[in-house]
Length: 305
Image 1 (cartoon, rainbow, N blue to C red):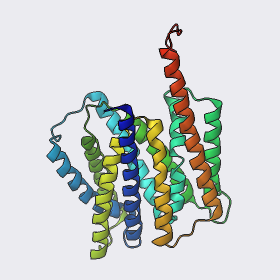
Image 2 (image 1 turned 135 degrees about the vertical axis):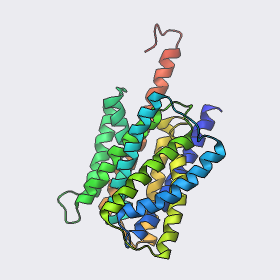
Image 3 (image 1 turned 60 degrees about the vertical axis):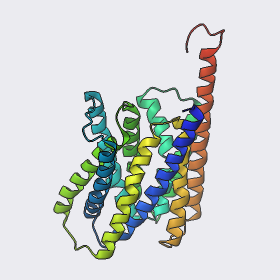
Image 4 (image 1 turned 90 degrees about the vertical axis):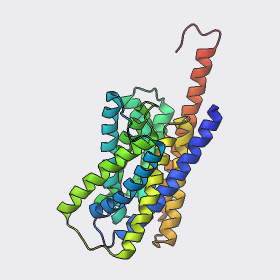
């Protein structure tokens, strides 16, 4: 497959994942009126795990045994996914869906910063400036000290940290590890954890309508898990990651037409700043990468730099 074809495939998978996650978020927010957090996640997780298990069996990967290095990476990836799930749904149950999604759009900027700090990837002053501008956009959405500020805004920000851990771990997995296997392990871990926590938190009666919504959420989050894992393992991350921003469009529309949430001007301004900063960051990353390739392949280049 050509690099362009891989990039386009990754972009399509990323957009599909974002649409699936927003639909899942919508259904989970609807059931939050009657069910507590871990109970909802556990019931959704049962359906999600069964769907993923069926696909894994169909692909014949149930007997796959990852190398010890990949096992360690998958532990970190699973912890990241558990943390982001708890933080995100906690924020989602108490905030407008568009606000939570807008805060999450800072993720690509956080990924660039994390790669510079932990993977020692070179980041110039232009990208650092874009990252700073993006986090200013986050502050416009969160608005600490304002009347609308609450602790759940900080919980939504914590989600970004856990997603960075999850996605950086995903990139470190060997290509021999099947996508569906990674997805199944994550789903089993999240479902088991939420099942134990739901017993401690308390159990509410489940109406038939809530079960229907949870089945729908399980369907969409299953495909979201698979698509996001596949997207992070094909093509160039700098090309694919900007397509995360399609989530914001869906979240605003859902918030408006399903929940009647009209985004405030400062929220829209903050979201626009984050998106613009993120797109510029990706543009700079691609430009630097092309310059580096041109330098290393130049006949005049004395050595690889």
